[in-house]
Image (cartoon, rainbow, N blue to C red; front, side, top):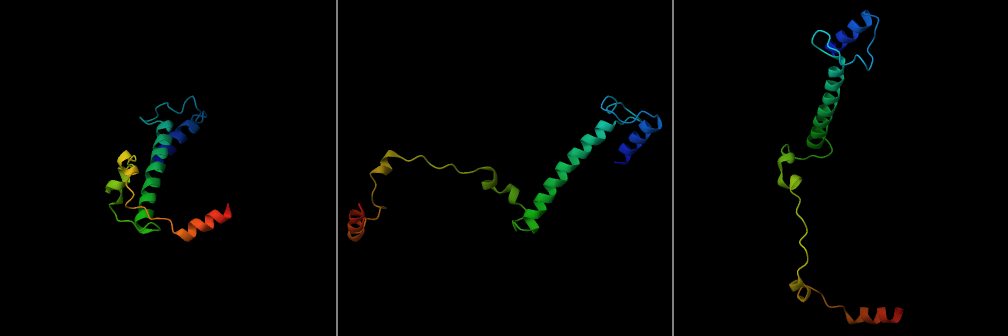
Length: 107
């Protein structure tokens, strides 16, 4: 940021000021657009670091290696139903007779 201040001061001393047309002009081997680019990159980087530490030490209480945990990157996809499962009734509970009567009365 100090280097950007130097570039800004050099433009102001020349009574030109920083404008879109001269923001990428090199002053002492440094440009004002480079300062702005580095500021944006720093903002994104520090935001990611803050998010990580919030997840690890704050409300998330996750382990420090949670980003490397496989489910974070490789989500399991639901298996498509097999035709052989359609006829498999061993895991299906029978409907009680009283419930069938109650439903019939409501119709």
